[in-house]
Amino acid sequence: PGVVKFALGPRGERTYSTTFTLRSNVPTESVRNILFSGLLPIYGFSPYPQDLLAICRKIEPVQNRDAPYHWSVDCEWSTLQEGNPQDQQKPPDQRRPVWGYTFQPLQKFWPCDLNGLKYCDSAGTPFDPPPSRPIYVQVYTIERFEQVGNRDSDANYLNHCNQNGWQGAQSGEALIQNIAVREVYEQAQYWHHCTYTVLKSPRITVPGTIAGSAVQPFVGAFDFECILDAGPKMLDVNNNPVPIVQDGFVEGRAVRLDGTGHVLTPAIAQNVYLKFANALPVDFGPLDLVPPY
Image (cartoon, rainbow, N blue to C red; front, top):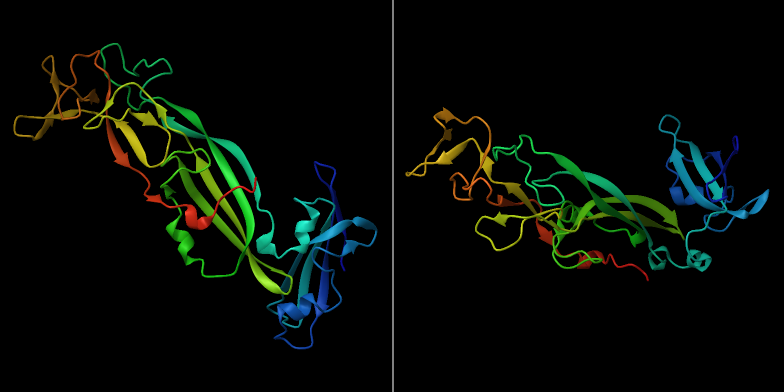
């Protein structure tokens, strides 16, 4: 082994790491033979010699491209245990998945303040660009082992929202942001260690109406985006777009519209929004993203 590195984690866990250098008999040696050569610790079993509470948690063999007889194997021991220690004796895909979450801000353009006051100047013209402020999105991470298989189907879930309810989120309020997969070797076979990242953002309703819909306008969620109907042009009697003229002058800034292409009157009227699709729905069921509690 090479130089041993030691680290003390935030929860008091002790971690030791080092790199072994091995020489194989043939340049086409298999990873399995390297792992079970008898010269390396056993994942999930072997303790660190000077700290018997630290168990081997990582073994990563890498073959030298320029010298294929030589292998570098990174090994790590740690006293930190995730979940029930008995889980380590089970097949990886039968272990309890690890769930976690955090919150991150997502900047959104808001049409009004928290009291429903429209973001317009004193003449009723919307600010351009409209003010933005963050909404806080809950970011879930789900880690688990899976059988190695064809993962091309993962792309069918990325940037798709939930078709049905998920963890308290109504339809359209959760989004698959990423699926990360890395291959690990354990219990004499390869597995996929998968990390799913799912965003959850409830709808926040705002005053106003959506053109052609009885649904209350909102910010948040992922399936649709409500955008204020406003612009510098309107439709004439022939439904052709023409510049908006007010007080004899062509209006160059965005003016609130009524959802049918005409100027919204009176100036104190509630905002009208247009609704646009952002993410297609998909059934999360086949992914089995269900917490173990």
